[in-house]
Amino acid sequence: MQKTSDLIWQDTQHQALFELIDKIKEVPFDPDILIQLKLYAEHHFVLEETYMLELGYPHKDEHIEAHDRFREELAAMLETDPTMGTSLQISLSDFLFKWLKLHVLGIDKQFEDFVMKSDSK
Image (cartoon, rainbow, N blue to C red; front, side):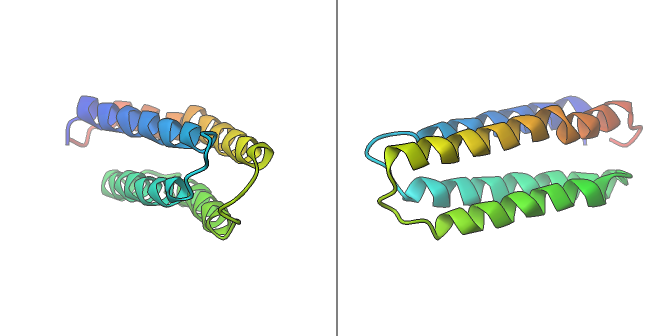
């Protein structure tokens, strides 16, 4: 496992997640975007969690708990009325965007720093 490629895949996947979240604001609202977001987020989380386990990341439990909270929030959103109004779309998109931004700049940055300093390859 090479450190540089780890960071590239992580950044690329974060960008894709932000793009999916932006699509929630589109009119007309496509409820399938929430399913796409759920599937992509799950793929990303599983990959990240696998690397954490392989590298022996000391904060993996806290990080996985954060992923689990996102999973729960998204599952609840999937139960939302597919004909949601524009204001709800914007609120939902803003909430997810802020959550992901804080996650990426906070807990994911800590993991990135750990990977950069790790001797594991």
